Amino acid sequence: MKPSRIAAAAALAASAVLTLSVPAFAHVSVQPEGTAAKGDYAVVNFKVPNERDNASTTKLEVTFPADHPLASVMPQKLDGWDVKVTKSKLDKPLTVHGQKIDEAVTKVTWTATGKGVEPGFFQKFPLSIGALPEDTDELVFKAVQTYSNKEVVRWIEPQQEGQEEPENPAPVLALSAASEGGHHGSADAEDASDASHSSDAKAESEKTTEASSDSSDTTARVLGIVGIVVGVAGVGYGVLAGRRRAA
Image 1 (cartoon, rainbow, N blue to C red):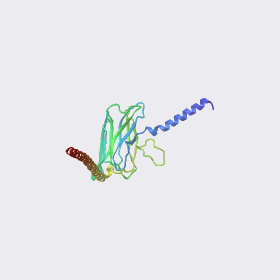
Image 2 (image 1 turned 90 degrees about the vertical axis):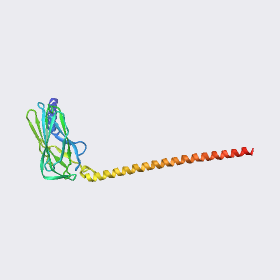
Image 3 (image 1 turned 120 degrees about the vertical axis):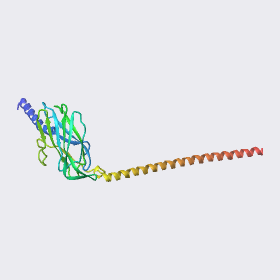
Image 4 (image 1 turned 30 degrees about the vertical axis):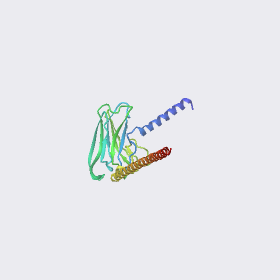
């Protein structure tokens, strides 16, 4: 094969690989800051890349899973964006930290007040969410990305086990095992905290007692040495006085 044909074939293969790999990293995704433990609270970021070279992303809508509702969702203020949190009544109330919750967040919408996510850039949209469910290993969200040219891309397709990634995959948040002393066991955590404070106070008291005891022992030793020195000096003075009288 001629060198020119080999070069052309290599270029075509590289182009094909690049084209096939673009959807793998260009879609809307969600990742936690640190860990997202079951039963706990977490800060997560929805990462939105701009896939167009002639339009900006001006709106992002994230729909929360109805099968695992979240009672607490708090967005972080972002310059250049308005945010709206939509809540809905629950068919079955939740019990969170001993309190019944009859509504949960169903959608969060960010709308650009400026240029939005321009071509060649990405934007992170952070949320504090919880308490995370304990009966699942992941949360599947649905995201809708709107561009300045009115184009809408729906990232809503779930990943099927054993199959290739869909063209427009939905963001998936993987949940780690429940952490010991997490928010999901608030009463136990408070008891543990009280015990910890009690233990710390006891340890501090013992340290103070030991320090006081050490100080007392040191003082006693110093006084004892001073007494011995004074006694020796007295005996020496008495002997000297007796000799003078004898003389």
